[in-house]
Image (tube, rainbow, N blue to C red; front, side, top):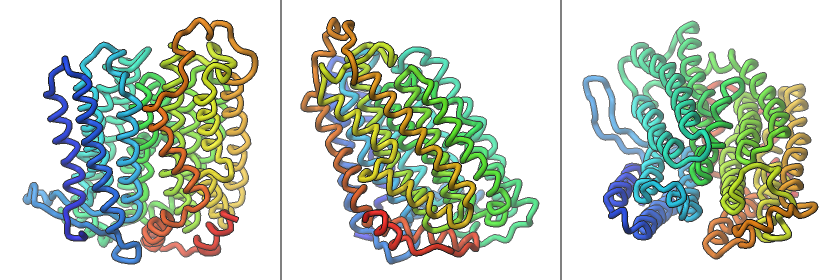
Length: 511
């Protein structure tokens, strides 16, 4: 199966599905939902086959395909996946079907076209797969920009309060970041011998000054996309206004394009600049961890609170990347996966709670667990996973990031640890005020609050809970895929690992 064009098929398949769904009759919304769900399952099956076909001990980049596009510019449709990209592609394949199921009635409540809503989700899946699979810098940039379009319409047309403001702010922030990257992409093409091929560019020797400017262009785009402090202000607005399913993909996958881009482009293509900027990036990471956690504590809106927690988590990922150790790097990539699972689950469960209450304000809840005990239990579990409780997948990620950072930069690791304490505060405070304590009498008057999780919603949350627990106790199948790619990235920037091997560290964390 290694010769099968997995990446191009996976990229095109959701787009074809989107066209089919978009042209289905508006008066048959159930058919649109069923076709979209079936199409996303097809992508999941192909992704699982690709995962099984991947040789963790083989070449760094596998499933390589290349088709000529604009030969005069040296642009081609080139796809390839290393372990880092493969993990993110699997995350997309798992989340999209669950988001479609969770969003079964979202479009109807907005009184807009149901087929268009689910078509937009499939278009978004196409662009997300493309951006992680691209091995041509120009192709990556195209997907990086195009993925803004479906998310813009999902927020602006199907979102909640202040959706237009949030959609425009999201689009403008990302567009400005994209302009910085476009300038850097053009500069890289000029100094790199007029090619956009990643492998060819990774061998180019760039002068120190030019390399720093090019790094800065890429890094600003990725820092806004992630987002890192102080480029984060668009995320709480977009996450708060977006439908719960779209918010789960926004925070669970789209934001990872920023950290993935740093790993794939900034570090290997600009190694000396990466080391020169590393102290500044580490500072932004630890500030983001503490600052976003403090803001999360003070939120009264559930979706904005979850959005701020994600900014804090991205601080951990940034610290793991720029610590330049295998442990921290593997922890950062594993965090990208585990954060997508845990925060995706948290956003979906919060969406279920909000749809029942008709409000996202924490103050409108109180004692909801007495009416919807199963939903309250899943919210509690998702919160514990988000704060990296031992036994859940994010704990392994956080442990690797902190121990890998501590071996080379103790002050940064110590300050980042404060974020763990603050995470317990904002998560437990949220759970206590929404589902625990005295029952809010107003809840008994809301019909939706008398309905606990139905079968469809249980099918949505069960796989995510299972994966979070499984990877919390046995992360080895994933770390075995991630670690060679991370080690190759460390080799690209000329850094050796001063700490014990990742395998030993993961085993120790499991104990």
